[in-house]
Amino acid sequence: MIKNQTMDQRFSLRGKAAVVVGGAGYLCSALSRAMLESEMKVAILDVVKEPPADLSGEVFFLQCDAAQKEALLKGREAVLQKFGRVDVLLNGATCNAPTPFLEISEPEIDRILRANVYATLYGCQVFGEAMVKQRKGSIINFASASSTTPLSRAFVYSAAKAGVLNLTKNLAREWAPYQVRVNALQPGFFPTEWSRKHFIDEERQAKILGHTPMRRFGKPEELTGAVLWLASEAASFVTGSVVTIDGGFTAMTI
Image 1 (cartoon, rainbow, N blue to C red):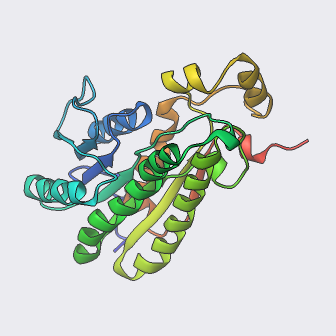
Image 2: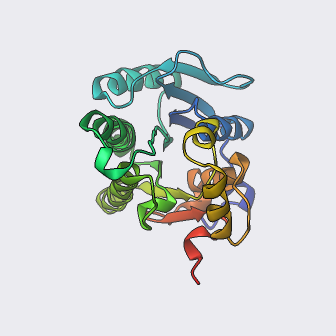
């Protein structure tokens, strides 16, 4: 079947239904927009009350705390009622904190783990179940450059993203017989307004860029090619993989 498809057909996403968890965020709103521009149907689930601005196409927004499985189950019901199926799941819910290690509190640990690990795990459980039943799907989880490399001032976040990476590989193995592919993005530094205010001061920026061969931060649109590829049939033999988009950050040494 694959041999009979044209290259355009293998890359085509027209009509596919995607769920973007955390889709109102800085990176995921750009990825949602790219999916819509590729003529996908997109459901955005996010804890915020308002959807991203300037979205056009077949899209609907649902306020949802992805760290609560019951909320995601209700979200799945709404998505299936609206679109009939789920072809792609992008797990992008996240949060971080720059707290020194000895000062990290239990509530902070819980908040970061819930946003990064619980939301990803529950998202995979809830929407992955639908994909396993339909014997088809692509799950894309957000890992991080800190998933495998120690990163200062991001202790709980780094541990959480390491867990996301492990979960991704485990599910890739588990669900390959059902033609459900599970992969991870490993972005480098794509600073949000929050991270520039709380995490990246002038000294830290100089260190980051000094460790990045391309000597700049990433732009949200520079993630879209990888996401659209992983969502498409062009990546039909890709599962358990980590796609690194970091300007060379994790390749850098002395």
